[in-house]
Image (cartoon, rainbow, N blue to C red):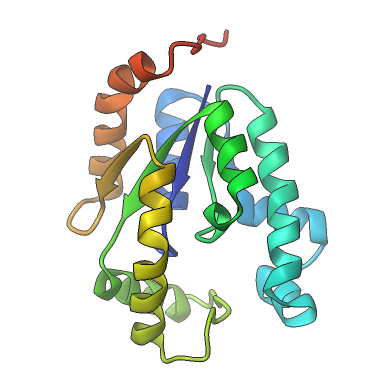
Length: 183
């Protein structure tokens, strides 16, 4: 069984996922990194060249690859849940955990990413905070429906979120009766 992290951009999926994977000695998969490997270009380059539609097709391939593994920690792209088939694949072999963050927190985290040179292509033609608010509002119901469990990351460190996931794992295992520990 995989642990699959969903949520909006900068909600902590990659940071928490890589930290949790190291802590519980499981492999870590970041679907944005898998997309870049499959496409041979950055997310920004892919979106610029082929639009979000091309990116979403590549993302579906990346999700298929990641969920085929058993026992991994998977950080997904923020829009991966927009495709019901992606959600079905995630849930078929995983505990889906929604990492939540308020739009203002997301904006602050995105600003830190931009300072370090990470560019995230715009999802809409709106300004940054307005875009974040509208997309988060639109996707919240989808994230909630897809998730087995959710954690508000707004006032927590990466380690605190990982602690919360570890503490919840027994409950999630009970909810997924088909879980088998991998050697």
